[in-house]
Length: 147
Image (cartoon, rainbow, N blue to C red; front, top):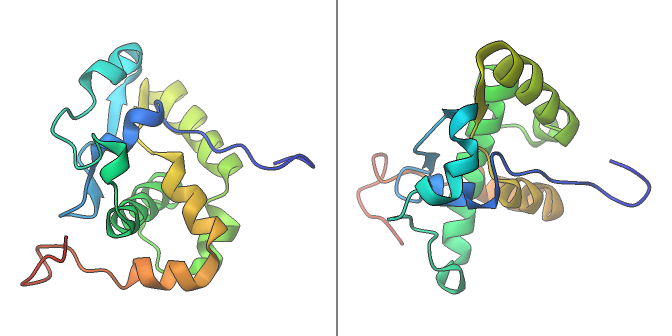
């Protein structure tokens, strides 16, 4: 973060949104070997809910946000979170980058899959949107999917 704003980074690239399953509110992949990152665009889920960008709905973005909360919190904190304050204080872009670099890339040669757009939406739309996201249930938890 600088006086000019924040930089949100998608790992390994913007196509990582295709790894999100709307039904499960989860990423299908936790990490990929760094050697596969140059090929990620080609191997990113071709059957994704997010393959046709104009058809992405608010509900889909909300589910992607829930998936991203879980993915980022497990990556950085090794646990899921439900508090907005923890998200703002602990899941900063700097902390995500630092954990990605030191714990995953340097130590294990992998990159955790995480898209920046849901993280941006969560911070931009604040705690009211956060509460909407946190209250979502997955298809496994609900009897009816509203997608």
